[in-house]
Length: 205
Image (cartoon, rainbow, N blue to C red; front, top):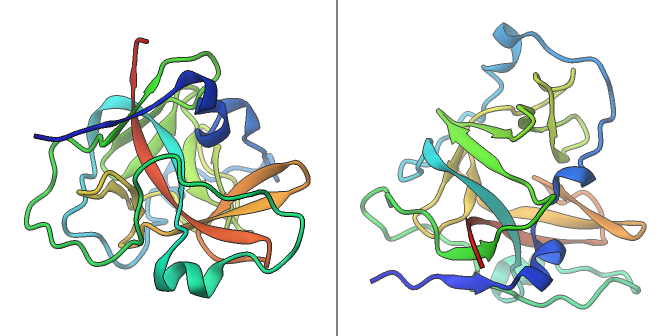
């Protein structure tokens, strides 16, 4: 029996990506024939590339193990890191089949939270913007097509552990930028730390 972690509505805004925080570095976008092939070379064989339900994303810091040892922040002034869910260090999955119920965590429905769909490896939000990795390696939603220079716009899936995966990698980096954080697919600065993007099932509370 699968046990799901409940993320309280009061803390949802601090760990779930909000629709209003997406930034756009450029107004130039790519045509559909150009961006649909922007996918990583590798794919996660056990990843679920289509999910019928709308879902959110929770930030689950990786605070132990070799990933943390390699990438933990080295600057002062960064916020205290806590693990609000049940994420552990990412490793090669021992699962042998795709998990048809990817939700290991739930959160209360609330105005302004990011609502995502996943279809054939493409992420979209409720405004029909495409989830992509842009030229500076930041994860953001643009659209209806990704901005020019986007690196990846497809190849997303959900792991058996309930994490968002790009290609075959479920490790992302949360980086402090002023008084808020951005998410990247690579380690880009010393104020960054490794996280999993945990898929959240929204429920009425």
